Image 1 (cartoon, rainbow, N blue to C red):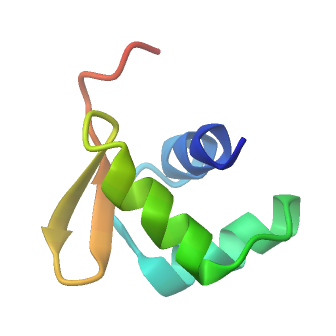
Image 2 (image 1 turned 90 degrees about the vertical axis):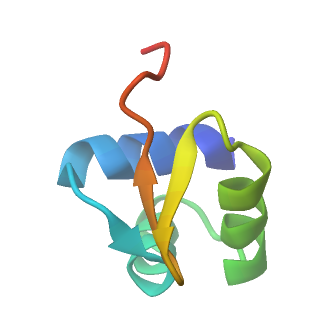
Amino acid sequence: MVKEILVRIFERNDRAMNVKELCKEMLKEKMVSPNTVMLNLQKYKDLFKRVEKGVYELVKTSKK
C-alpha cells in the first residue's frame, strides 16, 4: 500500500521531504502517479504533517 511505502521512505531518510523527492523514492518501489502520493499525504493527517508548501514530514507519534 502507498501509505506504508511513504512511512518507510520517511523513516529511512529521517527528515522532511518535498513531494518531488517522495515521488522519486516511491518509483523505486512501486509505480504510482504523483497525484496518488499527494492524495495519501493529505488523506492520512495522523501520519503525515505538512511543514511548508509541498514539504511533508512523518508525525513522530505514529503507532510504529
